[in-house]
Length: 230
Image (cartoon, rainbow, N blue to C red):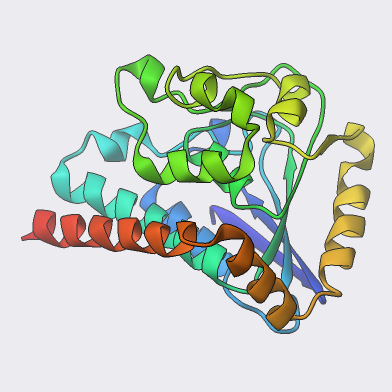
């Protein structure tokens, strides 16, 4: 299974492991979405990945397989991001490895982002690969990253290391690797004290028009998926 879930109410540990660098197939995106669904008894998820990759993006083989496969994967990812952002599940991300493209988006939708020191990269690689950065990740970047760094981290496609990621806004803090799980659980326990009404009401106030726009983008991708399927 690409996603393992250990429920320890009021927390749940959600561990992503799809193999080297943790790329996301359609199966993995759907499993991750299910693992992050609303759970009244365990409202806070601690999301972790592999040491060689928190998540290194969507599966390139699926993206290159054909229009139906590509659009299905993109639609599933868009729906996952929107459901998490508009739902009551709070997320503490515990990152030990590469978080690029879709992995960077998973960090940006997490409420608390903890990282460890190391030789890995974070950011959006699309521009450096000859592709424009889509609107959805650009919106997430606008909401969570340092405004002074937005241009280089979005339009220029610059990726950065974990130490720089704290100042840029991908991480809230770097912690010792041996303390990562304990500190993630401490931060998660604090988030569990928030009521759903307080959390969701505050999030919607803070994100404003960005949340409905993300929903519109996700639905547009679903329409592209349906058109590709014929």
